[in-house]
Image (cartoon, rainbow, N blue to C red; front, side, top):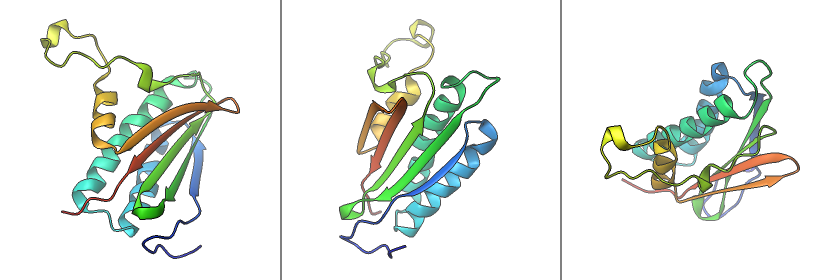
Length: 149
């Protein structure tokens, strides 16, 4: 595999496992290790892990029936400019998390509907996030630009 050098794009690395909570650490370690090798600072690595955990848990919990987990594929790629691009793919139920209306953060806790805060967090901590459906797969793409402390 080509070395990670500023300005050069490298091929995607991928990991495919069953969409089960027991595999969550494998996905996070895989992506965080790549980000660390690309020189992302520790604070941003924590943000990447948090966003990734939120996205992965949603896929694991809702994409497939509990008794028949499907697969989940994560591609990790370095883009020009040092951006980290994570693409999560599953063949589960069609779901675009970005269409969900953001909760009213000014409303009292008891007035807010359950859910939605994770997606707000994901939007806030990423530089770009997008979803599309391709070949019967949900494709969630999350991009982080490197920030230096």
